[in-house]
Image 1 (cartoon, rainbow, N blue to C red):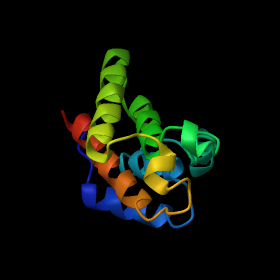
Image 2 (cartoon, rainbow, N blue to C red):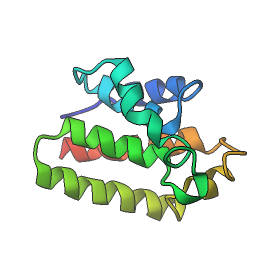
Image 3 (cartoon, rainbow, N blue to C red):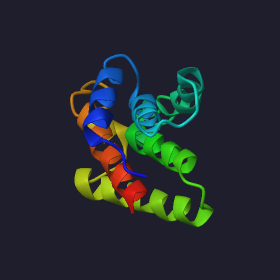
Image 4 (cartoon, rainbow, N blue to C red):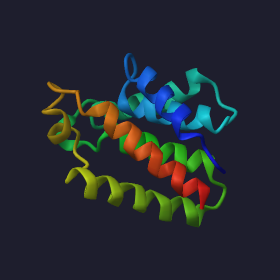
Length: 132
């Protein structure tokens, strides 16, 4: 499956102005892939992962990562590939940012300026994995 990364980035940047990282990443990926799921359902799937899983920040994984992993599961049919991709998504993000913890990336939610770029970065990784 080949996703248009320009459209993907535009969707994520737009959603990130009023949605969380988990929601924005999930919605950007699923909509660009034309996956048959409503926005309302994607928001319900992604909202609990906002702010490092339920707003825990210092105990939770970045929503960009969790949104990407949810989308990976929806957009793949092979459980083995889903699991392998999830590990690669996690490791790629951690390698790029030095952590997957929301509190470190966003200064405990006080500085969300890096968040949109985190979402775009990891969504592009998912797009690459879907293209393999």
